[in-house]
Figure 1 (tube, rainbow, N blue to C red):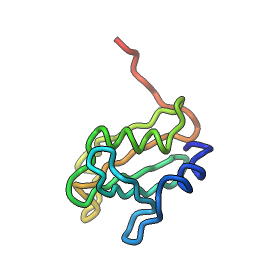
Figure 2 (figure 1 turned 60 degrees about the horizontal axis):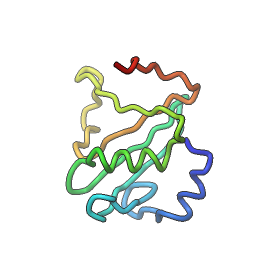
Figure 3 (figure 1 turned 90 degrees about the vertical axis):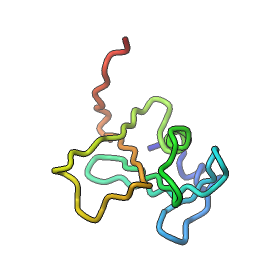
Figure 4 (figure 1 turned 180 degrees about the vertical axis):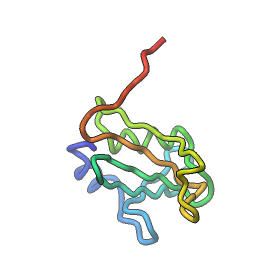
Length: 110
């Protein structure tokens, strides 16, 4: 995650009171976007949630630019049904993942 994340958080968000770690204003409609960010088991994980609908691509990019450096790759994974945890799926939450050791396989641009 960005080394300057602390400054971004201090200047642009407020702490959430109802579940997320931070709340940003959506660049799409100004409504709240709840964000939880953590580093665990070698991965940066950023959960992005709206209460009324899933985040748009524009909102996901907005959050990625806040949490990841310009030279860092972050991905969203499709999880096979066999790996889903019952009761954990939230259709209004999407996730960014970044491997902390720097290895992120990337397909060649065509």
